[in-house]
Structures are given as C-alpha cells and as structure tokens.
Image (cartoon, rainbow, N blue to C red):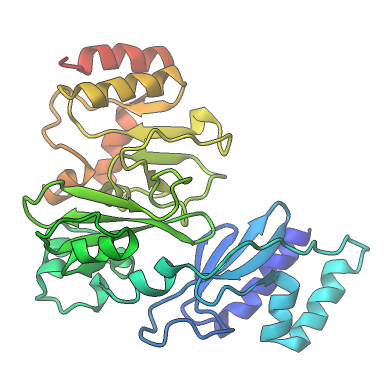
Length: 331
C-alpha cells in the first residue's frame, strides 16, 4: 500500500519537475529542484527518485542533495507534504527510515559530460550525428550519447597520462548505475582507430555494464555484448566485455544472452558455453544469419519486429541450447 501511495504522489509532482522521465517502475529522472541542475544545458537531468527496499529516496548527482521522499515532497510542495503524511501514515505505518548517504558530488558528474555536447544538440550535418543516423540508432537515446573531439584529452583529465599524444574524436557512451550515477564511459571510434572501444571506469569496484539506469529487473531482461546493440531491444543491458554477475537480482531463466554472431571466435564461443552452464537463456544464431549483430540487422533494413522474431525463434536453454551451440560453433 505504501508503494502505491509513494507512486501516486510522485505522479502528482511530475508536472513540476523539469525533464521528468520514468526509467522503470521505481526509478525516476528529472532536473534537480534544489540546484536547478546544469546552467549550461536544459537537457541535463541528474536528479533521481529511486526505491530502497520499500521506501523511495531522492538524490541529485549534481549538488549531492539526498533525502527521503517525504522531505523531498515537503521542499517542492509543503501543502502536498501534509496530504502525503496523512495518507502514508494514517494506519500507523512505520516512519520512513533516514537514508545513509555517502555520496559526494563526483568530478565526472559535474564536468565530463557537461563539457560535451549530446548527439541531440548537434546539427544534423555534424559528422557524429551523421554517424548515429547512418547506424540507425534510436533517436530517443541521442540525448544520452555524446561527442568528444579529443577523447584522449578527456581520458587524461580523469586518469592522467593514460592516453598518448595521438588524439582523435569518439562517440562517448556513458555508463550509469541503478541510481543514475555515472561510473564509467566508453569511447567508440568513428573510423578505424584502435581500439575500437575504449572504456574508462571511474569506479573500479563496479562491473562494466551499460543500461542499468533504465533496466527493470522485475521483468525478463536481455543482455547484449555492445551498448549500441542494447538500444534496439527493450529492457536490455550490455555486458561490454565483462563477465556479468547479476547477484541474485533476477532468476536465471528470465535472462537471455545475445552474443555477436561470430561462430569462429573462441572467446565468444567459450562465453556462450558458460552462459548455458549457468542455465541462462541463449540466442544461437541460425546458419543463414549473415549479420554480425543487432545493429547490423537494423542497418540492413530489418525492422525491430523482425529482429524480435529472429531472437524469439532462436532462443534456447539447457540441453537444447547446448545442442544448438555444438552445431553453431566453428572452432
């Protein structure tokens, strides 16, 4: 009942919260009403409401403000606060515990992305935007992808002397955790620069997993290799080369792995066998599949519905997955 009331009042508040978006059932993102968020860009939304156990909390990754939902409502609308308290606790429900915030405004949250333009902000003729349009990336994610003309210099700001003298532009793909805090970013080369992907972790204790801020672990999820592929599949995250540990967030049978179509790649085939051994679902591409990954399928003209159909028809588990994988591998 308390969760229903919390969501009801969040819904009542949303018209007053700039850039309000619901990321999943219990995660909401908007511009911070305390600090106003970025003064440079109205597209920045670094404040979040999120659930811990059965209670909702507020946190801003720009100014560092953190408080429980009741106090957040009190700040935004004192009159609504009185109504909320009356409804939330009228049956003697326990008071919302005070959250323990160890958050400190992070350097990367305030400057790394603020100094970059999102793909959405670029002119349609800009090479970076042309790259995204050519790859048919979903435009709803253009405000979450960024352009950096000197990626090496950006990396060296965070980790000095990491990058050499030769520098070049890259597409920047931010990695956020489930509360919306930036913990890594990846630079994707526009050309033949190597490595094609370069990921910089701002928190070494976190796994390189993309899309955590929008995934709903209460529903079945998909896991791709590359972040860009994950943008085409609903409720999908990307392992980004990491050996993902889900830590009991979801039942294994509700997780489907989608690897790139590389039957001769020993490392990928090995990881596919590991997935089967752990009783996850696995997409095993059919013999007539000529595309390397989901993005290639979309670029070749397949619709999202057609991609889903291929995924569904070629998803296997347990013994059937092992049998198909034995037929699929070329190593």
